[in-house]
Image (cartoon, rainbow, N blue to C red; front, top):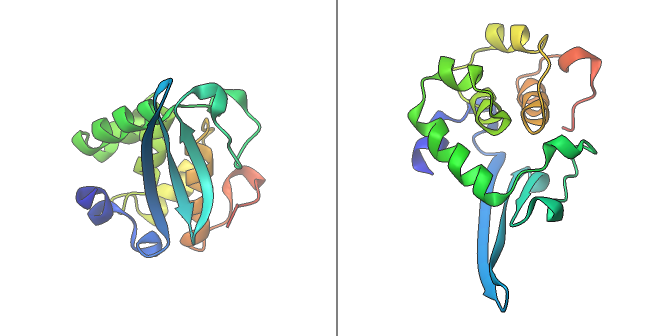
Length: 142
């Protein structure tokens, strides 16, 4: 997590956090991972995809499990910023959009592209944090 915090854009350093919990019940291990901005949940990754409650989209293609997030997070940390931005995994791409190695000029160019959830939401968060206009006329959640 420390490497991610070091890579996080300065405009989000004290505002964005990733949380995770896990517990066991009679059916096995459960839990979720979620991302908050200023303490408000902006993305959620639950144990089962059908349990995912996303406040950021009604797009069923945006459902990912906490296991999907964990695998993508580990992979993101091993990738160059160019490879992370080019990833077909929207979690990896979304994490890359929060990275300080992506400057404002590149963000403006990326705002013209179409992204799947959760990358779309994380792009809007980053654009708003940097004081840039929202992507493709979409209103930012910030």
